[in-house]
Image (cartoon, rainbow over all chains, first blue to last red; front, side, top):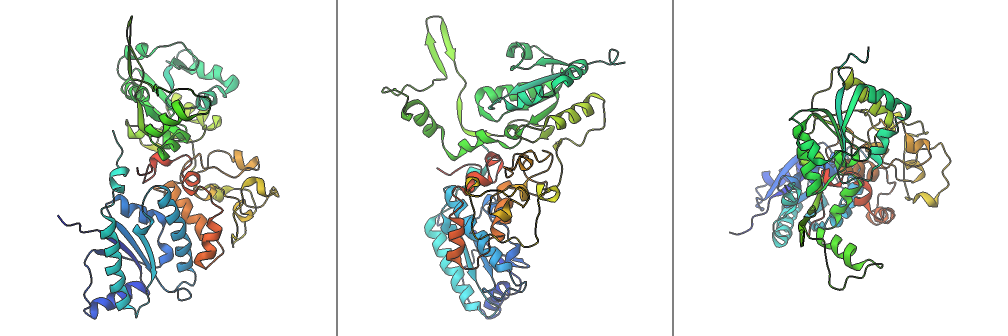
Length: 141
Length: 324
């Protein structure tokens, strides 16, 4: 059977979710693998959310926020950026491909960029293959 | 009078542990006489010559209170965990190793194969050209000798048996043990099973006496030997990693009072499902840089993020071990 990756996306309410919405209302076609969760700000996205997504079977996690300087709460996206960089190092140390997580800035007008991002990220994850983290997370008895 | 009250039966066992938890029980000092007046120690390998067989012969639920310290690393730890669960009314995961996996849990960064290779072959002081590794069974003239099986994964106690209470700490503060012991002996109402006892619900930072400012901004992380601590400013604000933001209170700030940053042995606060992730979140957000390359440069100072943030909790974290 062909591998159909499961991808979780955390999108900030002000820019990225609106951008994704624009892609939808503009009837752009893009890969259906991404399950989007709206959060108030990319600064709300904690490493725990990403790890939990993997625990529950995600093959990749996409994080999107407002462009630098555009955060509705001024600094949230920078906090997100710093956490993302640290999380990536941690994931790599645990033997997980760091490409499985991706952070991109999507503004409310960038529906097209969102659709392209989803397509390219889905492609990346498809090439990486299924993520086995959830099996490792199960405690062996 | 104390004589009239029936004594409780108590056991203390070590799994994969350093012995520090057992010593923390001895650290009650002269109060040990009160402990002995209130409890019969029926099994305690560090101090008493009782055998596993003696425990096997006890009726189920015979022991009122068992403090199990140490992680579950091999089949012997697992067998005793199951046996003591069966024989005990209250089973307490005592100390960081039983609670979260502890320091032995860091072995989950490696595998059984790599550990055996290193310990029994590669170490500089070892000569083993035939690669003789421990066997679980070995036949000699007198019969078959057996050794416990070394597992690939280190687990916390609750991954193996049902645990009634968790007492964090490396080791737990003796004062907390006395409080918990007194509560059990006097028949005080105990919290619901599964609770963490002998620790606070707040984060270390909430009650820390060091001076903190509102705006933490870190441009560089230092190793403890690289700075001279001023003795009063928040360690994080001095650029020293301190696990305070993601660690429970209960230890009476033994490390911080001794001018050493918190290492996180009391485990995560109740709201943190993954202890290290909580800390990663806290540490990363105080980095005072906005450019990806500059952020990476600051992060380069953290030489071992996984080992640092999950020092006591790797087996209980979401990812649990490195992927092979």
